[in-house]
Image (cartoon, rainbow, N blue to C red; front, side, top):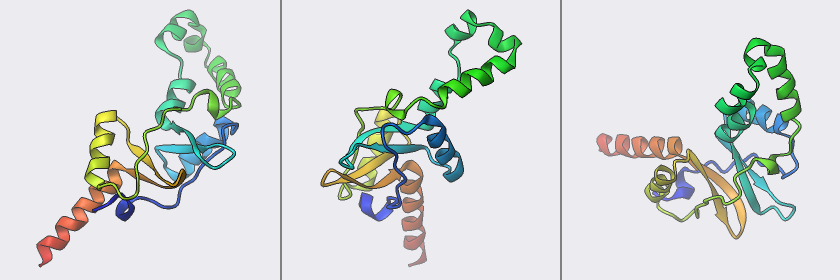
Length: 152
């Protein structure tokens, strides 16, 4: 089974100057793990994930110790969120994105995700994003293949 057999070809992408607010809305509305970021030539420039957003939105332990008022005055956290949601994605996205070819064996893509501790990979062909494949896509594909074998 190849990546192109299991990938999702319907990819939502954003540009590098897209505010985090819009990306957060996309991730929540479509239940995404991440969103590829494309440059002006529609080439993969980065990836922003749910984890990237969480790290940026939630204060670190060091920030909490420095600003104890976040704990005592929740309104201050809301003010912090209002400031952060306007930050452009290129300030927090992962730039050196691992991508895979649609012709790669799906299990190899799964092994890459496991080794790199990521949940999804953009699928790139001729420098263009043509899909996204996730651990879930591979898991479903394997279960469906196994179920077909059991019928026979």
